[in-house]
Image (tube, rainbow, N blue to C red; front, top):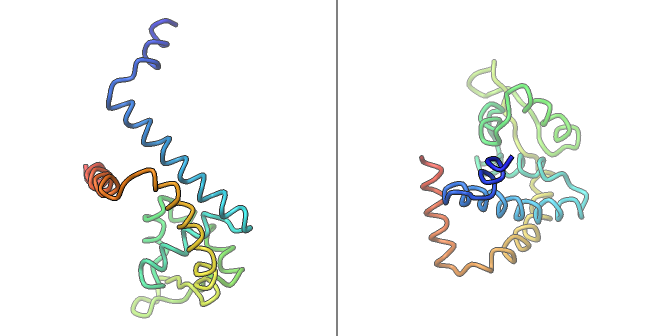
Length: 148
């Protein structure tokens, strides 16, 4: 028991840094999720719409699955409610009819335009504890971690 207590209480710098990063990220995600809940929108669905828009409004479901970190079968399940709500449409790939592409609709774009500015403002408020130079430094460090 003493050995375990020591192990979880006396954290080496790399572990302490990791847990601090996870906690800070969770706090920021919570700010975003609380906003989406307050306006009656599912944050995970917004993430899908944003990822589609990042690719110009149309992308392959397999690419989307990879970007958001879900399996190919799960992406189909996640797309069903978006399609039912008219936020996306599925169509045959223009060059390979065996594939499907998903596109954001004008309704999906309107939803993003209506809510993204306020969501981003709330995140920006939380990020104001860092100076611009600190944010740039943090971004460099996070990109370095992502590439490792």
